[in-house]
Amino acid sequence: MRTQVVIIGAGPSGLLLSQLLHLKGIDTLVLERQSRNYVLSRIRAGVLEQGMVDLLKTAQVGERLEREALIHGGIELAFNGQRRQIDMKSLTGGSVVTVYGQTEVTRDLMDARDAMNGHLIYEAEDVVPHDFDGGRPRVTYRKDGVEREVFCDYIAGCDGYHGISRRSVPQETLKTFERVYPFGWLGLLSDTPPVNDELIYSNHERGFALCTMRSLTRSRYYIQCATDEKPEDWSDDRFWDELRKRLPGDVAEALVTGPSIEKSIAPLRSFVAEPMRFGRLFLAGDAAHIVPPTGAKGLNLAASDIFFLSRALTAFYETGSEELIDCYSEQCLRRIWKAQRFSWWMTSILHRFPDSSPYDLRLQQAELDYVTTSTAAATALAENYVGLPYE
Ligand code: FAS
Ligand code: PHB
Image 1 (cartoon, rainbow, N blue to C red):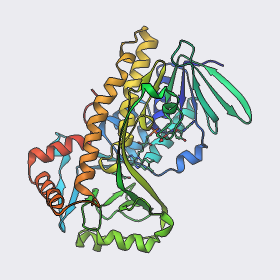
Image 2: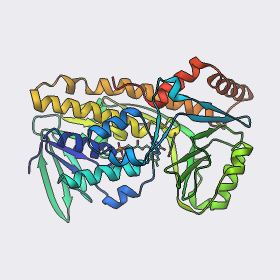
Image 3: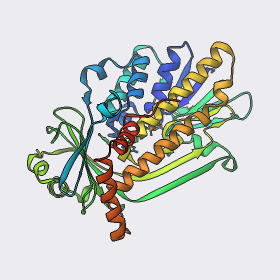
Image 4: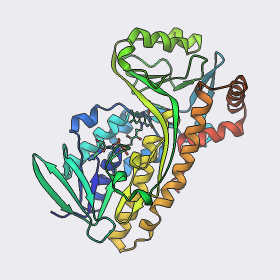
């Protein structure tokens, strides 16, 4: 079998790339090791940058998003029992915060791919990229017990942090950068009305907490937890009690609790793999980088990678030029490292670190006071949160 681009992974990166290339008349095959429902069952990101919203509209999957997404003018930072709003819309000349769950983005992309007879194979086993450093790249996999092989022009490794693609490149050609944080996020999803119109990021002596949402009837909450915690050790009541303790009094008072429909723990790490291109194999999204979710950048960085990659591959097939392919990695990494910095900074000012000295804690308070009282500082936070330009 032969196609133009094989895409490994049917998460947001792989599905968005497949959709954008299809609209340019480029054939793709998406190979996903899990089932469709398993991919949709993952509860992850909730906030989209304006650039991602625009890209989803370009991909012709923005219709339900436009109908159902919540549009916020800013976020709130809570610390020392007070709440201060960062008015992003006015600070950035109009950019807003779009709240629309990653699950819905994935569902919209899957439905669009199906409607356009996209070539997606779920539950593909043992997917392996081969010969991407030469002129005849191919991918092997097993489906229903039958070994298969696909020849292609290019391979897009959109298979996430634990995927096969990054592990398939010669490790001596790969440089990785990592920072592992000494805590995780315990997340709870509930069919309860959000406690506040906008997101609330809370710095508290007991630990970080985040109040976010998926709609006006479905809320998402996170509390910082130790890395060895297990979701099953957290009853709903225990979670709600701890969350209330980490929120300003008026917010805790207004909190509407209810049964959890999902509870999970995400470890926090910063990670970058360089470069993101190896001959005819590209890495995109979580396959190449991970950020702590504090800055709401993970999914959004995947989108900007796919913007650059789809543009580069389209230019190649339309004109034969490999210029954008040659600068794909450098272009992505410039934006990735700025998002890495912002995500690390947001994590450092909002969480309690076990080895924080009293001096460190005073610095955190000063940083929060500065960023919520200085227009220059608030603007810097705002322009990073709503998303830096795709350039
Ligand atoms: P994904 O990991 O989403 O998709 C990769 C796909 O490849 C998966 O479907 C996987 O099954 C498949 N795959 C893996 N190995 C394969 C193989 N060998 N063969 C075939 N297929 C293979 N971001 C935020 O902005 N905010 C958040 O709150 C947030 N919370 C998160 C919580 C968790 C637990 C995790 C893990 C991530 C979170 N993220 C968050 C980041 C997340 O949203 C990612 O950035 C986003 O899923 C990236 O999308 P992809 O690059 O498509 O990778
Ligand atoms: C979410 O809604 O899941 C969410 C929002 C903002 C973040 C992280 C997660 O920074």
